[in-house]
Image 1 (cartoon, rainbow, N blue to C red):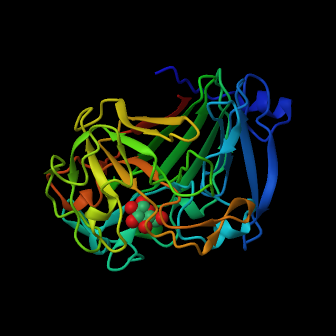
Image 2 (cartoon, protein in one colour):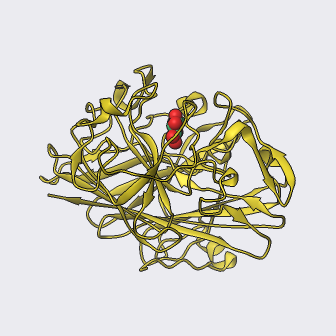
Length: 374
Ligand code: BGC
């Protein structure tokens, strides 16, 4: 991994007069983005590389607000769904761009056990718990910390106290975003706990490689490096089966337009909202998970991760009521997510890779969103 991050002495940072972060001795540009109802200031930070690619991330939810990348003619577009202003981020339920925790995806009925102790976390999505509860990591202000890196980088940290949203253990968590000069966005997570707990962290960016708000993603061509997926019940909880994708509409082992078999997946609403079992290794080895190409703009996105799964979600719940950037409505299938993560509801499935984090262990994970053109 070319990625490096080391703490910079606080005295140096203070000397430089920055908000507490550095990039090759240059501040990451920031701007005020809004205020929470509690009066907390929200700040937007922008990482820019030498190609003019930029990624803007706010401290509320450690949320990616913009990803501006060139198309095959060098034209820059923002490919991340979201809003021009902060206020809609407070009420949206789509989790645009957010860092999700403590447990990304669903936990059946919000119940799990650790060492025979039962825990109940919020039921906020039908009968289940979704994306960390009512007020997960996506709805918290994160602190900005020093990062020293050869590339533009920023780190967000937070302390999640024992019992927050029902989860056990005092958890220290950080997420670092690094933008390289070869148009890769590296997202690295680290977490520790003082009691056994469960953890599943991801980023919830919705991409449209033709530009956010520029129509449907059904013509994007996807390859998923997965031979199997985890089928779900009507409430999107895995049945426990690890099912071969061969002969099913879930087969993306070779490049396939998203829309080709989408209707055959059924579901309510119809579309892909499934966890794929990545072939790069069932446990933690790093590798290519997915490739997406937009034939119109020529933009390509490759996703690398060390996580065992990826939730491929085609924005099935978007219904045109969220008005995004430039006043454009986001309709069903106007964005896709590739949420690298552990499998949904893992704490209740002994046959899934474990999401248990014990005191003394360090949870570490990296995902790369790599952009290119064809
Ligand atoms: C889930 C969807 C959910 C969406 C919320 C995704 O991670 O898989 O079912 O509706 O998040 O935006």
